Length: 303
Image (cartoon, rainbow, N blue to C red; front, side):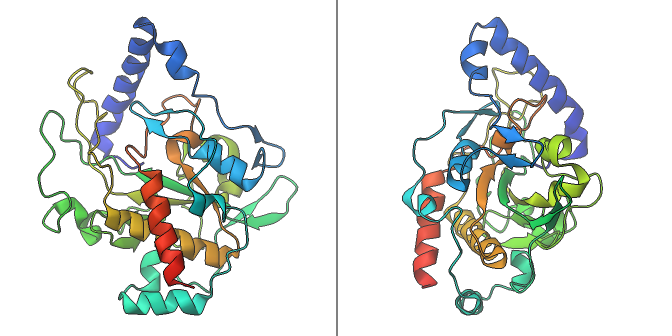
C-alpha cells in the first residue's frame, strides 16, 4: 500500500485508536483471532505447506481495519489448479495477446525473456521471486467527502499513471482503474534499498531476500468512516476494483509466471503483515472470485 506522506502520521494514530476501540468494545478477541500470521520458517524463509496451502492463508479476505478473515477451505478453481505448478504458457502466445491489445512488455514488468527478481536465502543459495503481492494505494483520502463519480474514468486525475505512479518506486507495478499499468520497478529487479513493499519483508526477508516478493499496487481511493476518528481512511469503494483492473492483474500474474516458469503464490498485503504492529489494511474489497474468473478467461485465450 502506498500513501501520501502527509497522511502517514494520522494513519498511525488512527490505527492505534481503532485497535483500542475494538478491545474496549469487547470485540477485540474475535477480531484479533484472525490476525495470526501464516506459519513461517525464518531459517528457510519459507511459509508452511505447499504453494496452494500457503496461498489459502495469504489470500484470507481482508476486512475493514486490515484484519484477515477466515482462511478459505478452497480457492476459486482457476487458482486451485495452477498455483505452484509449471506455467505452461508459451511466450509467443502472450506476445500475440499483447500485440492484439497494444500492450507493451515494459508496462507489464519488463521483458518476458528476463528472470524475476532474485533473493539470497540463509544458506547462501539464490532463488527467484515466489510471491505475487497484491496491494491498493489507498490514495487519495477524501476524508468526509463522497468518492467522485468519475473514479473509473480517464478524467479522474489519479488514473494518470505518468503523473502519479510511474516514478513511485515503492512497488513494481501500478494499475489504474481503467486497467492500464505502468512499471515503476521491473519484475526483474528488487525494490530500492530500504524499500520492502511489506512490513513482513522488512522484518523477515530484509535486504538480501526481499526479492522473494514482487508487488502490484491497484489504484483505489479511500474516505473516512464517520464512526472513526477524524482523518481515518477506513472506507474503500464498492466494488473495490474494476473488471479492467482485474484483467490487467491477471495479465501481470501470467507475465510473472511465464518468466519464472512456475505460477507464483498470490498474497494480499494485509495477510502477509498479519500480527505486525500498524500493519496495512489492503487490498480492501478485493473480489477474489472475479479475479479468478478473469484469469481463467485470459488463460483460455492464451491456449
